[in-house]
Image (cartoon, rainbow, N blue to C red; front, side, top):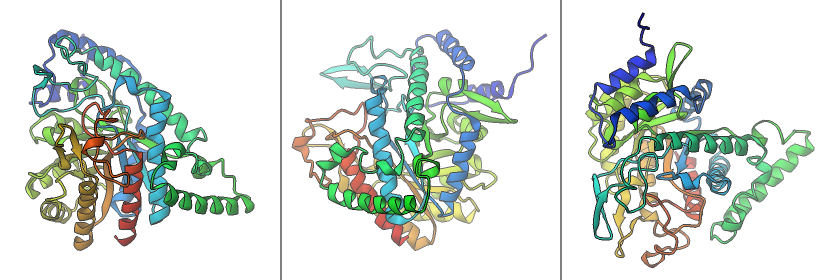
Length: 450
């Protein structure tokens, strides 16, 4: 007797029947299916109740009662799954969250771009490296960044390595979030060596000293600072749901609802948000909080159609709309989109991604971004919401805790000549720890005025 297809089987079949952009040209379809079968037999990476908790937190952000801070690597690599590198990412997120919470007196929802960002969409199927045309690097879950033909061949078994890398990363993140490392009494210690060399150091230290005085007062009042929210934090994980063979294999049914348990929140990218495409179909069928990226060509009608598809019941916290127009266009593109979606009754989390719309090539050939452009887009984002009387719900930033030189400007005044020193990203340029902290102080000031 043939068994009846499960709800997750039906989801996979529905996605397989639709066009799917930005998928690798896997050389062996049978091997992809074997890998998917192995992934389906593995435990989920997160649990459904955590996804529901994040949805509740995002509902608060949609209503202006919290603020979303989402950040992490452009493209994670398998080599970056080390205690030192994961800790550095957690540290910079914690620092930024403390600055935002202290400076704006608002709870911060902390969402890492972490434990799943192993695949990347690319503008072209090939790229030229050292004068040789090669298949584009599509993230460690697909192929290797090594500039060799064999290394660039898509290998479906790398998705199993991505699963294991995500599991190891999540283990570390959970340990750091709940094991005392994230306690507010450690506010001076987080990334202290690097921050100490930054122009942001004194400003951060002044704030940390104020927090220390507040904690000393609480101890004197008998408050146990090692327990509860003072001694630990909620830190959720997110990534782009790009590789459908991976994402659909990690869909599980819990309490009568389907969840993509590869992460707490997954998003649909600017290149894959077609209404008739498989990525939107996947996002529409899962109970996770989901997000969609909106670039400068997005029309108000496009945005509303996506909201109707991904958030048909108008539930706060279900859908985040991540706007990435570029600094020059945010004040023109964003207002009609917000007005259209809000008028239809959708209370989405409006999020500013000030990174992707501001990328260009430097004079010496590096893909980079100007810190001033990042700040200008965030400023325009807040101005639009202030004018409309709507809620600026969060920021989505590509960043690292390392002392890299990938984005121009900031308080260290990184110039073109500094880019070769520590340009380490696997794909797009990231803010370093000092630039990230500087941005957090500026966003805190904007939140005070919203």
